[in-house]
Length: 173
View 1 (tube, rainbow, N blue to C red):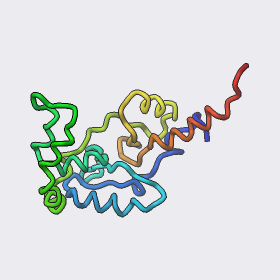
View 2 (tube, helix red, strand yellow):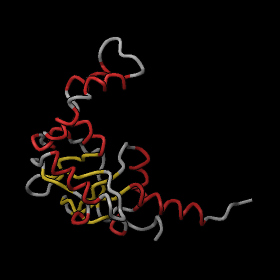
View 3 (cartoon, rainbow, N blue to C red):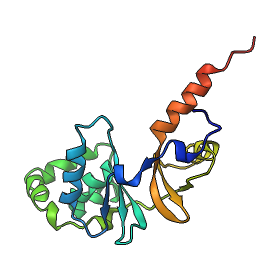
View 4 (spheres, rainbow, N blue to C red):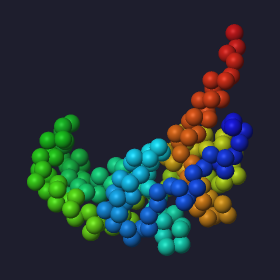
């Protein structure tokens, strides 16, 4: 393949990419990600969809960890006089951390979703994907076909294609 191809050629179909409903619990997402952690493909994001498989947003690994934190630590970096070593505040949470993990089944994921910063159509050229990855904070791009979510294009997969293209070009002297 080359960068003259389309998104269709590199996408991971929705059926093979981790996704959950917006009313799922944090525990459900951790279970899904843990089950996939031993597979050849390492997934760092989960799509969050509604009951009609319409994309609500994305949960990254950091979103999942952040959801476990108590409110007083989520806003800790914003208080007046916050220093550079915020890790010392974690000691406040030492005794409550295990309880937060045990209570993950009570936390609903829709409250921690990151909105989608960019999406791409199934027949868009890969050069559009290169542009979107280069100019947005996205590591994955939801792929749509007639406005219906059909899969995901990952930065890591596109990067392999770009690297192949860069490395196969002859250096002009």
